[in-house]
Length: 452
Image (tube, rainbow, N blue to C red; front, side, top):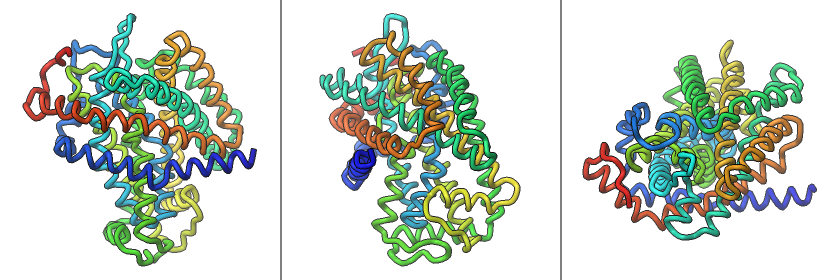
């Protein structure tokens, strides 16, 4: 098993190495240029995300779809992932992580557009979509669509269920000594209560939890930045300088090269916001929207909030805390996160605990829906109930077993999801341009979707 785990780890390192980074970031930049910088419409997109397209076809509101996607996207990667990038690549990694989010907005826009364009209406009235439908209906690549669905189904059990529940049980045990098994029972019960109601129940719960957890976490981080006020501007300058300077960062940081800062900053940014992985468009397809471009704009705000806002604030908290307390020592992202937040009196450790628990739990909910939709595509709706039961069991198991191999397998599945999805985005980029021109560039955002 140890040898097998080493092999999986090596495959994961390869898949998330420079080839994947170049492919994902290249797609971000290509779509940004070809779609004439959809990032400039971000405030229009935010306005649309909190409006409702009454009478439009779909299972949940645009905000409900966005909240579910954000629930699955905003997870431990936003806290520990950013700290890992800083620990491995130096403070300059924060800037590269942020830039990845800025360009990733265009890719998330494209994913949302294709999700609506190629979604299908089932006999019961529900809407199904995502990269598997874009691959099958848009490109006639059924075999690649099947592979994407298989990778998604497996990834959900890893990165969605077991990895997140393990993160919750670990921090509860380390902070308050709570037995992981009891945490697992509670998590499995709460997950069952929500997911048994399907996408509408998941969207309703996520619609309540996501704004709360995001505002709570951001406000707490702003308080910490206020405590570290005298180190805020030095932190910003250090982040910008270290992103392009091979010299040692100084303070409590380990010196790193530009290449290291780029690699870990870009990789963590890509992994955190999931732009290009193909997960978010699965729930975007269920949105009530007049046309594909409206939902594309709404979907693009997910990357904005996830990386451009939350990851950036987390990075500033980490870097300013290390500057304020040069005695901080760290070997990895988890220890850096705990130490940096613990330096803030009263609010630091509780903020980290609540942030990690809520972020991880909502990720469990969002990925359950992704996995179910993959199973429905492969085997039909009847099989989703069995997958749901399996998912709940895996949520419990994740709290009581060692997850080193599961982490590596989940990373592999995530990377393998991205490849078919990027194929659909690049080969259907002409469709993206045509739809964007019709609805956005020619000012028809309020027009109902035209049938093909």
